Length: 388
Image (cartoon, rainbow, N blue to C red):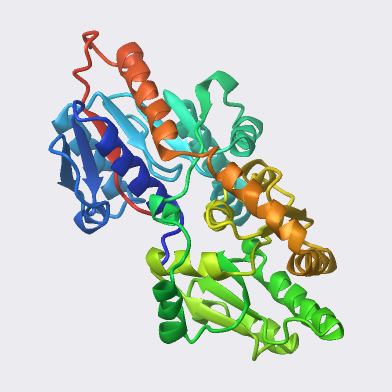
């Protein structure tokens, strides 16, 4: 399956820590099968099973008990919706976005809405340092919860190294031809299928694009391939496809492995990502690593992530999206410029650079907020591996 979300973050941070730090002792607390997905790690990394549900009172007390027993000097909570209050040592926390918080706040009105807001503020206020994955996310945290700027560190995400293995070979292309029967030009979307991802408008824009291309006599067999969640939970999208008259031209492939996803990125004519809200937004960068032109939204963190390498559109304007797709498809000189800019943009983000800064913060926090710590680091940094 494709690997989206917090799980991707945890795997890449822990793998990079494993390459860079062979001295500090790390405890990976969580479901053993999730920890196993990270792969082989050096001897200073230890798996500590915790089988209770992460977002439950029982799970919180089990986690707290483990941290106390291990005498950890620091805990890294990899997403906002764990419950780290009253831990026996300092904690740092990664915040990927505010989307789930805002959704919960809308669902919980009155007392429960106010309680949820206050709880989140306390969790963030209790963190020794907050890692925001973009400047956009940092501003959101400051604005919604009044956290001082000097407590928030912007540490960018980066793409999985498997997307840096060069262009697809003839054998790779054969894989998608045989396994998925993809032998035609296509536009690609990869990511979760949820309302804020704006997939419905993308389908409508594709339908309008097909009409324009028909007038030009160009790309008669162009398809739209959507890689992500199972469509069974999103029947409205199937209705959008039928209503837009492109049922023969839109394919939903569900989840695919990263090694196959990279071939789709490489072969796509355009990667389309019209999301309404992203705390960071990795898929456009993953496509750019293959030199694939990207058309994405001009909102949230996306302009920050793609820089000048993508075409930005208002995500709620179907015809603006269609016109951008048409132009990028038909303008070869523009495609070449976008390819070169894409390669440059990807180099600005690196797990090694990000994790080196995370390690510096670990040491700063352990030395300034830990109890009775000597100057050499005796710290047992603990990184949770509970995957959302």
